[in-house]
Image 1 (cartoon, one colour):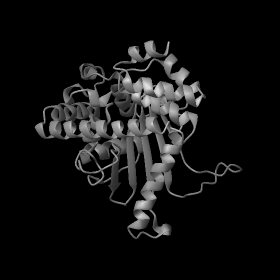
Image 2 (cartoon, rainbow, N blue to C red):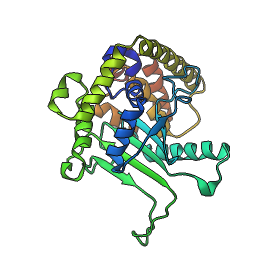
Image 3 (cartoon, rainbow, N blue to C red):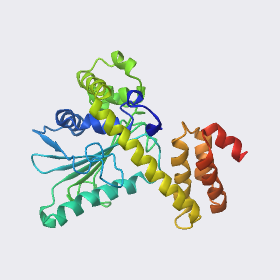
Length: 295
């Protein structure tokens, strides 16, 4: 898992690295143009809510928040672990964008367009698409759009429809899936090359090293607090699905979770069993050790 790695071990899949790369406003703009297919003159990446630049910002968040010259807002996040509630997560992000604008004085009829974009290292809908775009349309008349200005996009590294997607976007998603810097030469793409250069620069930056070390400490503290609170209260609040995700979250810190184990945990509905899993996950030093504990 990310916070157990050194900065030099991170890849573009890791949220800190992805956020640091996308903090380059030219790269962020070019990435958005690649995904959305329209020209953007400039973007401003928010640093106020980024843990990369504001270590005192509580509630660690590693999504990238940006705004273009037309006030269109963008929320971009790397996703490496499949979750059933990704749709609800995008809804939450859209609501956050709107609430921030409304509380700052924007009238609701003047709310700008917003895009929530997830870069997924899995296929979120199992349709073998590189890109899934969602807008609100009328169920009875598919040509009638609500035009509420909200747009949601899921990118997948597991697509197979290369003819329907810009070549450079496919190259970038293959780079993300590749997970290793040494495979860069396979892509032969100008945008991917620039991303790789940014990754190398970040890895050699003393300033970024310090920020990453601080991030690791904050994440560790938050998870230890959540772990203690969850176990002490018997995680009595919430659905079994939420508890299962807590277990998987802790296990992800220990290493790669086998698909068979992931399915076993997600299909478990007994809260007592899930509580037992959570306690064991908090004590285990590896996924293999956890497996031995529950056998």
